[in-house]
Image (tube, rainbow, N blue to C red):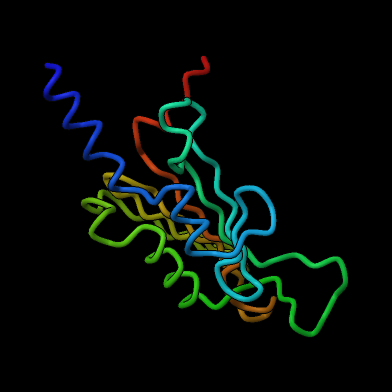
Length: 151
């Protein structure tokens, strides 16, 4: 039993990059928010328990909001770019088997939710008439360190 638990504890963290790896890979202007591309940020929520506090539970990818409106600021991101960032954060081989996928389009907004064994990935989009593109990507890890103990 102890050997199985030890192996589990050693193998599970390889499915997620750590806080240190995010800091090495991306510029960070404030705690747990990273500039992943020019004009695009990723806010990460890490596990609450001390043992796992450096492992992510949720990452939100969205356009960077600036206080002054500029020609370079945008409310949406290119869908291909969002997919590229998601692939960097959680490569396909680390997601596990695809369990289910849901695509919903209503009016000018759409959602695509992909549920894998190890993560759930969702993307929120807008139609071309409202600027077209992805306005948010969300990655949620299905990991033991992310279990919410609140009842």
